[in-house]
Length: 285
Image (tube, rainbow, N blue to C red; front, side, top):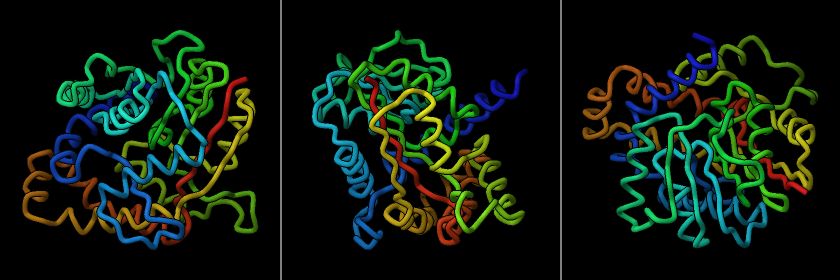
C-alpha cells in the first residue's frame, strides 16, 4: 500500500471513530472559532465557530455564490451553513464514510437534500469536471493533505474562472524571518501533533502563498489569524472533561482518547508561536 493511501485510511479511521463524539459534545462545526481581533472576545464556542465562517467570507469578499464545494467537509457544518446562506448548490467531500453519511442525514433534517450532496472523495483527485464551482472552500483540511501543491492544483482546476478559493489551515511559523529554521524541539512538537491528528506535515503561510502563485491563482491574499482563534483549544479542553465527554471518549476507542489527551499540544503550539492559523484566498481568471 502506498504511503498516501495508507495515510488516507488512517485519516478516514480517525474521523470515522471520533466524529460522532465531537458532534455530541461540541456540535456540527469541526473547526476553530473566531474570538475577535486579538482573540479577546468572550463568546460561546458555537457562536465563535459561526463567526469564523462569516469572518472568512468577509475577508475574502464573498458576496454571492451559486454552487460551491467544501473540501474536507466533516459532518457538513460549513457546507450546510454556506448553502443556506447563499441559497447555493453545494457538494461536500470527505475521506470518512461515517462523516459523509451523517452529513447526508443532516442535509435531510435541514430540508436541503435537493441542494446539498455529500460523498467520499479524495481532495487530491476530485471526481468533478474542470471549471465547476464558483467557491472552493477548505476549512482546516489542508493540514491533512500529503501533497499541498497537488491539493491547490485540484482546487484551481475545479474552480470556475472568476471564482474564489478560500483555504484556512494549520501552519507552522515562517522560517524565512529572523527566527530561522525550525529547532529540533519544535520539530518534535510538530511530530507529536502529526502523529495524534493523522497529519502528514504542515508548512508555513509563505510556502502556501508560493504554491498558490505557482498554481496560477491571482489576487492572492494571505493572513495569519492565530491570535484570533487560539482561545478555542483551551475552551475545548475545559469542555472535554465533563462526565459525558469522558464516557464518550472511552467508547470511541484509544485513538480518540489520545486525541483528547493531546489537545494541549495545540494550545501550547499557539502559545509558543509554532502553530499558526493561516488564510489563503485567490481567484481564477
